[in-house]
Length: 215
Image (cartoon, rainbow, N blue to C red; front, top):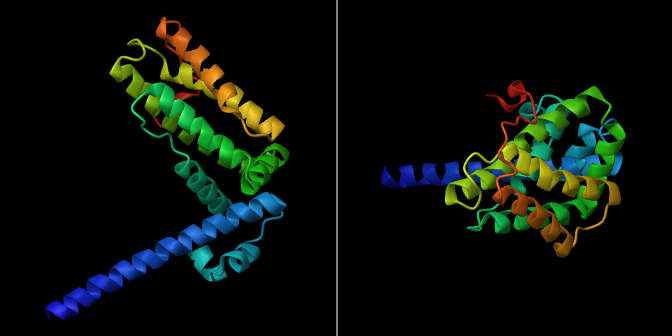
């Protein structure tokens, strides 16, 4: 009986492990194909070939191409989630470094190119809007930790700090297709934080409409 229970537990772990690998392989293959051919030309059949996963398995988990692409891009943003280094400046610089490394990778360059070219497509815009909202929520976490630690004054708008730090970063990465130097990133972060420490970022500000933030 104990042996049987042990076997079942092992089988369950194996299944979950294999399922996780399948998901990872499919989403990575999707990102690669997205960067190679773009959204409109992406075919689930090619994702299946590249990932080595049966097409019906992919459709079972992601019934539509937009759902598959959204999941692939969410995984990328999850992998780049802001760290907790113990200081706000450290969190921001480490996160920007991760973003820069990804943006200069083959997949990053391809996905960025696709976003610039196909953003007018409704499905692409909906995916981008969802990712933007999720990214804003993640990026505000270290700002709020910094406020709690006393690194920024109470009442500082986390949204405004995020906007001021990340807008020039994202613009640079998307338009130049070049890695951002540590000096450039540090200059942006230091200027924004210096202003925020004086209370200049204490604003009742909402960058995006309430319904996009889910609250």
